[in-house]
Length: 61
Image (cartoon, rainbow, N blue to C red; front, side, top):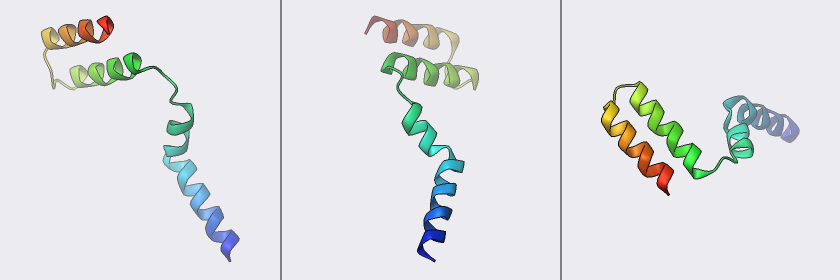
C-alpha cells in the first residue's frame, strides 16, 4: 500500500512539471530576468520604453 502512495506522489510531481523546472533550470540570472521581462512586455504590463530600459539595466549587471 505504501508503494502505491509513493508511485502516485512521484507521478504527480513529474506531471506537474515542478521536477523538470527545478532540475533543468540552470540558466543564469540574466537570462531568467530577461525572460520575465519579455513576458511582462508581451502581456502589456510594461511599455516598450520601460522594457528597453530594464533590459539595458539587466545587461549591464
